[in-house]
Length: 279
Image (tube, rainbow, N blue to C red; front, side):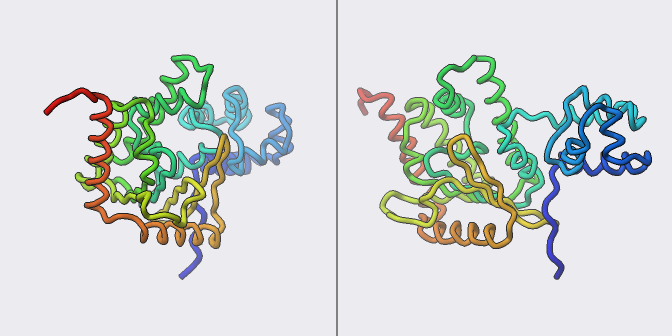
C-alpha cells in the first residue's frame, strides 16, 4: 500500500488553484508580486496555503490573472472566526471520517451548548464585548452541527470526570450540557466513555487531545494549551497519540456505565441548583 498523502485544507486548495492560474498566465511569483504590489515570498505563502490574501490583495490577484472575481469570492468562504492556531483544524474536521476527542478540564467544543460556550468564553476574556462573544458562540455552535449530519464522522468522546464536575456557568448550565452529551450517546451520535477520578493515573493526563482520520489522507493529531495549539501530521507522533488514546480508553468506564454516570452527575448539578427541594 502506498503512503497516504497529507490532508489538504481549503486554504491549501485555494493556494494550489492560485499557483495553477499563475502558471497558466505565464507569470513567475516575482512577476505576480510586482503586479499586485507584494513580495514574491508572500505569493509563495499564499500558494502553499500558509497565508490567505487580504480582500484587497485577492481583488488585485483577480485583476492580474483575469479571473473575474474568482479569488475574491472564494476568500469570503475561507474567512474564519477561529484562533489562527485552530483554523486548519476547523477546516480539516469537516473532511474527517472519524474523530476521537478527549476533554480533560472542559467539555470539547464540538459538544458544547451555547450557554456552556458563553461561560467558557467569558472566563477567557475578562474585558469582552457582548457582540464579540455572540459571534464566537455562533461559530462554535456551527461546528457542533458537524455531528448532526447523516454522513457525520464516527465520534469517539473520552471525558475526564473532572470536566463533568467542574461547574462551568452554574448548575443549570452544567445539567443542560451533560444531558446533551448523554442524549447524543443514547442516539448513537457519539461513543462516550468517562475516565473516572477513581481510575487514577492515565495516559492522557497531560491535557486535551483531538485525533482526526480521513478516507483518503493520513490522520492528524491536535493538542492545545493556553492560547496556543499544535497540529501534528508526523506519522510517528500521530501514531503515539493514537496509542495514548487507546491506553486511556482501556482505563475508562464502558459506554452504558459512562452514560449513566454523566446522567447522575447532571442530576447532582440539578440538585445543587434547588438545594431546598423536598420529595
